[in-house]
Picture 1 (cartoon, helix red, strand yellow):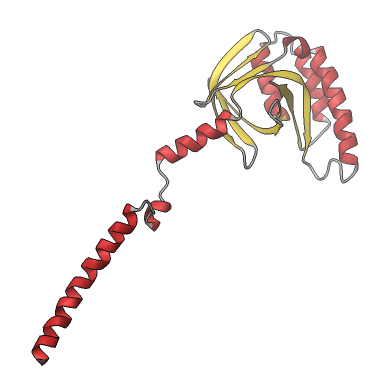
Picture 2: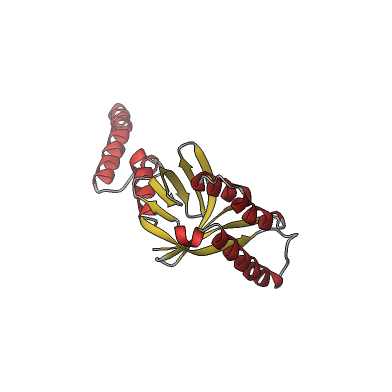
Length: 205
């Protein structure tokens, strides 16, 4: 009898992992994921997420005026910021007008596949972009001209695309191909008087 009990215990020990394994298999067969599967991020997952993000930017966005962002603590503090921003935006609008930007009406096109294009001052460039909606930062590369900018959505039809001052000047110089640099100096002189600001375009779909 004692020997029979021992044999039964051994058989139970052998069968236990098998039963557990079968139970796990049936559990997965119901559609529930194993923890390892839940935390695995595939290339397809990343591609799908990128596509969803890019869908929000898809389309043609046209120049609707200048845009200004103030980030420096030393520039203007507290309640004075909106006033300074409004005044700087007005001056920037006048400077853009002097270089003909209001007539050129820059146009940005963003595609779902991560490609983009810019038309400005008779020049057209194609490139690629990567947008992070959490940080509201966008990295754009046009033919070896890398640009990092802030991109803030304002509803479905408007966005603010702003650059560091020197980056914006590089873009304007490159796109305008100015033979007379005095036009760029109009904007440059204005921006030299301010620190820690982001300047660029308000775009409308």
